[in-house]
Length: 57
Image 1 (cartoon, one colour):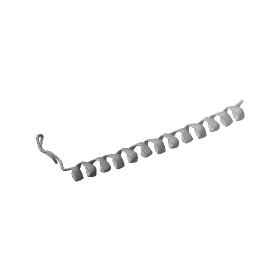
Image 2 (tube, one colour):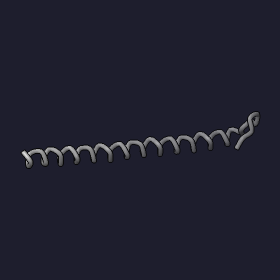
Image 3 (cartoon, one colour):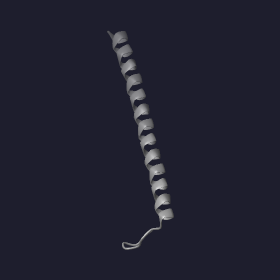
Image 4 (cartoon, one colour):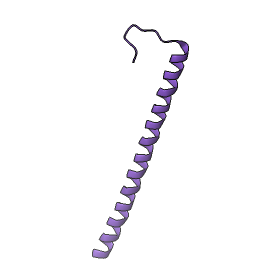
């Protein structure tokens, strides 16, 4: 971890940026994956609810 007034070399800056980008990309992909899974579950529950209402009617 860098101290408050420490300077980074160009190479360190590049490594930090690359790692930050990797982490951000992973985070966004994970967010999309979870959203897709949630929507899939909502659709399935909606279909089950429709079928249940048709059967019970």
